[in-house]
Image (tube, rainbow, N blue to C red; front, side, top):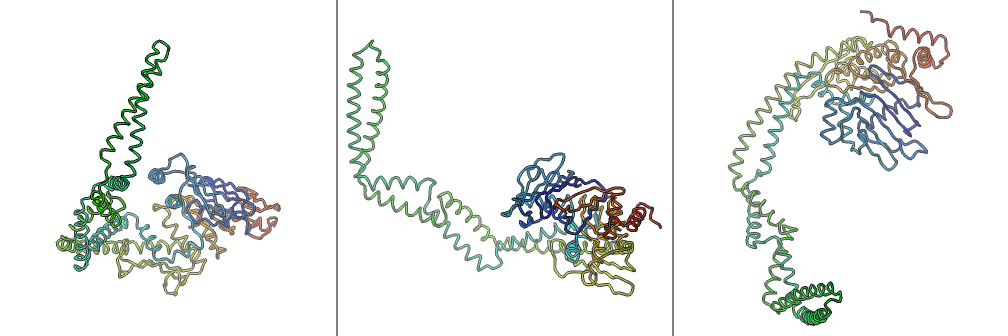
Length: 548
């Protein structure tokens, strides 16, 4: 459940802080006060794309922050994503004109995580959402959600059967359907394996050869330099020997440490002298060996160019080539086995699709009847709502059905797809009716309606208000509305107003203040006595028991 929402520098909002409770909350106010911006701010927290133009003039960045309750599903998502689980979940978005950043419990997060969390936290419904109701995928998902356990098991079986069949098809594609293509690929692989095996490359060999080529190619100049160094080392060793003889003659004069240092120096000079001598013994011009080393290094470089970049990569390429060649050489046998498995898997998939269709056709009339009844409660005259399920002619992971919502707005009017015959107000009420029927079926704990009552009024608006209050029995409901007939049913009423200095005033109105706000919504004149009397009547109507 949403507990708190804070926004700053967001559109017309300078600073805003709202606390929310359970039940039904309405947000009201004149056009332009920022009511729908609050819904937009919440959408950002749930992963919506950030529009950098939303930053308020004069501000460097817009900031939105929300605090939510944490249930088991949200805790599991946070744990899987490596984020800490705390008593509350705090999500924040900061939007600059150059981009945006998201934070979850104080740590930087990506919008993909926000979208995943958002699916478990809240559902946003508005006029745009109502239009999405005409999407066949949305309609199918709504039917499956209504079917709950019945469709869940059949849908899971279809998902698994599809994944199994598709996996086998991909294995067949990997082997290749055409024997000519497999033969060509096998020939190339044999050439590559033979080329690498014939060279017998050894990791690190190229570096050793590079050093040897350098030494052999520069042997004359190297020998001249090292010979001079050898003479210097020998002279230094002789001089150090004479030095230590002289120091030994000063016994008792306190030069013991100097003697020890000279002894160590002689040892180092002996090692240097020996190393230089060993080098001179092997440093001879050898054009034959140089040619062999250069040819070998060129061969390794060619292998690295083709299969590298390193010798380890060349050897790994050969290993993978052997594996792939083994697959290709046994392709005919393997293909025969896979083809047989594909036939079996396709039969299982077709059976699962049919079983799912049977379940959907069993559930569809129940959803149609419930939504039709609820539409009647929403002040629609003789409405009819049906859910059609027909074979799509193709199979997808979620089955092979086309699900369509059919609607009739009155007696004698034929049923047609809901998007073709429903007006904006009718479509809003259809969406509300469907949402109400799905309210307690694995839905997020919060549902937000942004002017879902647009295009309605009078008795229809009262019916929408009652439906929203009923929906709030099992979910937290937040609604932006311009209609007093809807607002009067709320448990909490938040009124927004822009003051002359541009500051946004937010008030949780109750009692007389609520009557005044409802009066403004009814007549545009908060001080109207008649409007005030009408507002009081609406509040009495909202708390009165509903007549059978």
